[in-house]
Amino acid sequence: MKRKILLSCLFIITLSIKSTVFAQTDEYYRPDTVKKERPVRKEIPPIEDKAPVEKKKVESELKNLAFKERIRLGGSFGLSFGTFTNVNVSPMAGYQITDKLVGGVGATLMWFKSKNYGVNSVYYGGRGFLMYQVVPVINIIAEYEAMNVEADSFIKYDARKWIGSPMIGASYSQPTGGRLIRAIHFTALYNLNYDNQLDDYGNNISPYGSPFVFRVTFL
Image (cartoon, rainbow, N blue to C red; front, top):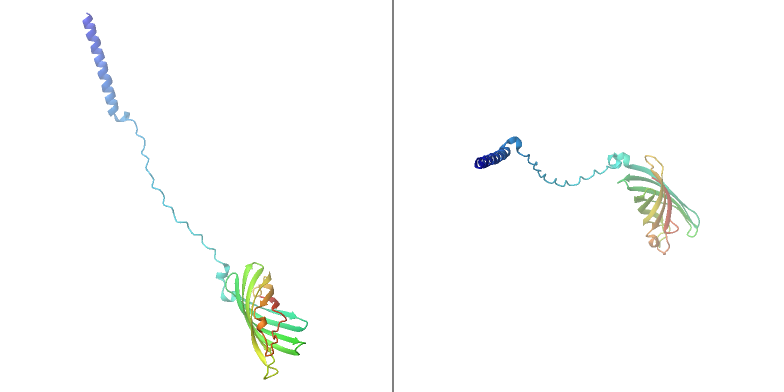
């Protein structure tokens, strides 16, 4: 009897083990019981660094101006009284080369009187200049002026002579809002050739009383 009970127990245990094994095997292979695999993370290739896009340069309004809109017209005048009396006027024309640079020419007519040398004459000549804006109200100026002046000589008393005056300086400017006359410039220049402007006797024949030249210019 005991033997039968023992055999029955062994049989039941054996069946239980087989059922468990087959159940596990079946669960392993059944599609609906397969554990979902974690999605494979695809590696995204690094985005190539794009070359920095250059900012478009803002075109100056000047580039869109026609030739006639770049033209400036005006002039300058100067006064000096004392041992030397000097009254001069100079019509001028300028051209806006860049936003900050103006170039131009002018013709000069001058009445000059000297008490020391007994000169009372009209001088004439011309000039070329460049004016560069450093800040909105300050400009630096380079100029070359050629003037025909009266000069004594050993041969002829009332001789005339051309003298050249390279000048550098600056101006303080006040805008006018005009189309042709853009600003009023209070100008101070220094004549680099002043000491060499001599007649045959060694007298200075510059029409200016000193190397410093002051003008008011409308341009």
